[in-house]
Image 1 (cartoon, rainbow, N blue to C red):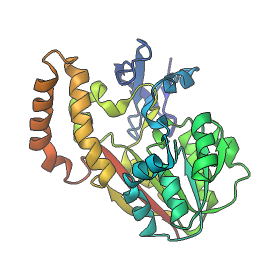
Image 2 (tube, rainbow, N blue to C red):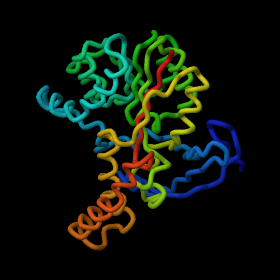
Image 3 (spheres, helix red, strand yellow):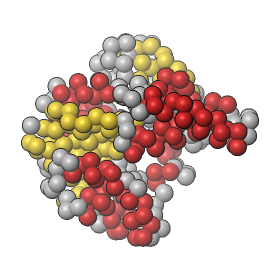
Length: 296
């Protein structure tokens, strides 16, 4: 059977196979392919019951227990609203996949008119009742965008890799963006040093929840073709640096199946992280990248 790249439709080859190493919800083997043309890495086939892999103790859906807890958790992602405010300081803001709404809370505090699209029902209820933003509870982002208004800011913080049909969604978002507006995207970096070394054991493969690992060069070209200028690309924001440390820690446990003990594992990952940190901070070798695209 020919497997075609979902972005450029080029016939693609099997790159690696892996399991759900992060959540261990099943023992199923998942196949990831790589496109020889655009270098997109993608899961095929996508499980028809993908929703079950978000159940249980999925970390992103850990809802704050109080408004004080929400404020404390939101402060950890304050750098995100600071990135946005470098380019846009007011207007309508859409966030796709906000989970419980740390960034949405900060955006509302900063004066933005905030709307969110979230597939988790409990998170959506929290977003409406506690965060106080307009929330759409659906896993069908495309349908939610059909009659959407236009926006000054659209944010996807570590979400694009989870979406089915991300290229259709990005095309729609480019059309919904007002002149001078920005789209902010953070996502795992398949050109990272960690992925080159760890491959299928890399924590940010996160099979099968991550459907596509998108090279930054591909995303930049795709958005440029839709009239958006790249005004920021970095792997050394707080997200990127945190994931560098987290990635070595968890991925090495996947790789060695923790046979040498937790203390020895911590020592190993700290040594590796210290030695390779200068490389990860140089260029675009970090575990995740954040890009900002502006519509002129």
